[in-house]
Length: 493
Image 1 (tube, rainbow, N blue to C red):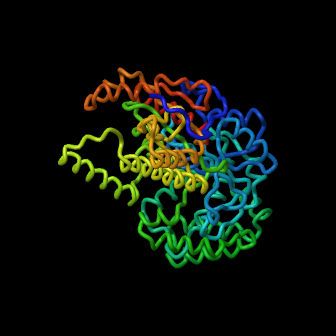
Image 2 (cartoon, rainbow, N blue to C red; image 1 turned 60 degrees about the horizontal axis):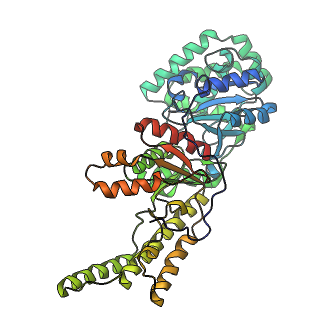
């Protein structure tokens, strides 16, 4: 039986779509590079060109230096291509640096652009330094792969300064890392010009002369003692002090706590993941049995949760409160007593009705938690979110149980149950996994076929054309369904 909608949960009109993620000629990064070139945006990949095998599939970020005068143009292009700006938690933010995330259906993880409008090096919890050669770096760029890169002399300068500034109490002692540094130095020194390097230093970093720079290279090649290596790092920080930004005290405290706390507790108390600038979002995923809701919700949570705080909630089976457990126990005791006395109730007892009120209350409690999580910037992925179109799957149950002439107490319980759903606002996005009922029966061989067929038909027979719902064909292979859901979800964030 179809239950009439309770309250005012309404969706503004929107197109119902059967999504098929389609790339528009080339990968997302290739389209980004082409758009930036076509619109004349001056930029380069100032570090990380050796790690294309990682950043091209989302395993590390892509460090770009963008002309300060092209900030608006870059933001516009990134937005047009589907990149979304994100912010690190307060103390982790560095002035002059922005982050963008993009979704490419062919890449297993989100792509992360680490965009610098100022050439800043260093970690958020340490002193950061600006290397004031942005204009010169951009004027020197040449082809270097997917993105343009600075001339080797500038790459060498930035690389050496960045590595030496990191040298503190614990010098580079890892042989593997030292070998990687030396191989990159060999590569960069081969193509660089010492006269050009001396000119750059004298014009833009007069406190760092060429002889001292040579000492920095020597320390990176492990051709000096550990004490001398640390002394060189200290001297460079002193010479660069005019370009330094010291971290706030809270950043130092946060970093210290992170080092002390166990990994699990650290993630709970100090979530370092970024928040999308657009704010938190509640995604509802509904469908009949066999449609793959739980599998898809878990996959989406894992996919997005690496970069952003996510929450996976099942409003159809919310955590039960103590009151619900007590009422449930009473209901079981009542059933046992009826069997012992051979009593056959003519209708639902007040305890049974009260159990449905408790379920509605538990769902609203979980809904409240979901809303609060989204308010902090998180993304909540919800199964069985109560929506008026299919309240039969997760919605008020008492109207179907009460007789026409119900008692005053029964009507009070009905009103109480309905109020829990009336106070639930619609989700920010609703995705419907639509599956043909007979296919649902085949996918659930361990369940009664009539039960599975009936619940699948509840979704199959609904006309979603007048709602915000995005309909996805769940009869296809799981990878195809997930591809569509990722694209829809990313568009909704």
